[in-house]
Length: 409
Ligand code: SF4
Ligand code: SF4
Image 1 (cartoon, rainbow, N blue to C red):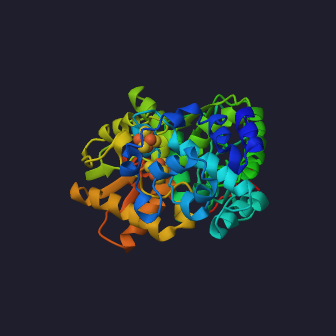
Image 2 (image 1 turned 45 degrees about the vertical axis):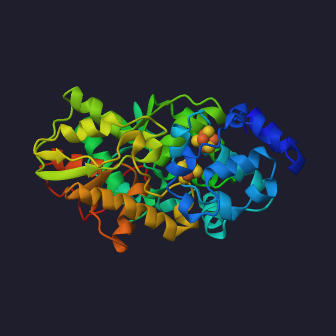
């Protein structure tokens, strides 16, 4: 826990509400709020809650803790950073929501039961999906040549698929495609197999700070000890947590890169030569990658390098992209609202006339795919799947045979 946040939690009582905000990471800036409402107008979730971010700030500043610290208010946020990037006063509202969630949970008033199930699973199984640790590396057993497993073997980089791509059967294709593309480019990388643990994002986003800090602390120690220069991830959630939150928890040495950044470099250096893919696609920017991480040009460079592939942009792109609704615990806590938000993004995708909606976050992909059940939409694919199709000439590289890789058992 950072000093300021710890202090803020310690000094908090209803009557010292000003101290909570002013002494926190969010800081004094909150006091400069103009009550202009830009945040609420930007919020993809405000319509489902009885309180938008503008009102949240007003009540926070006027010390009305009991009005603010309620699960039915604070869990209507997908941590999309739209309010934070648009606020004319530079107030980091997303972090304010995080802080208020921390305080609410410390008072025993959160998270929601469905969110707590995931947190308990992280505590008990090191993943939010209640899956045994022994199955974490199953996705890798189909990959040939066999992947290096760290720390038994050495590599310059670690590929960290994260819990969703490692465990969920419909998302393991992302882990497999990422490994195959990195292998095709002769990147010197390995995986941690069963030794990999959850990044802690699930706990952090819903305000279970102690669990997040415990998980992050263990993971930082493990990852530092590997001695790798780079960690590559294809999950925007893992990327955001490792890149922005881990250095605030403890010294963290490896450089964290999203796979789209790595692929853009590999293509520019001529180490990866995309072949033709005759398709028209549109691209959805994950919030944690684009708005929070500033990674917007690299995925587009990758797509634009593929001969025959046409990229048709939606009306809202990059840091202005509409959120898919999948993050911040919204999908777990308020699934219907999350899927409705995704259906609005899908409608924008349909307007482009493209045939495929490409993104590069398993959580975005799941939520955007679920929206197909409530309205019009496009089939969703990950960027790495498109690149794999491009470099392998469209061949199905999946094998039905499972190979036991050394070190994976
Ligand atoms: S956008 Fe910023 S200044 Fe305007 S109401 Fe929201 S927090 Fe206040
Ligand atoms: S982070 Fe996104 S969802 Fe959360 S309050 Fe801000 S605009 Fe709304």
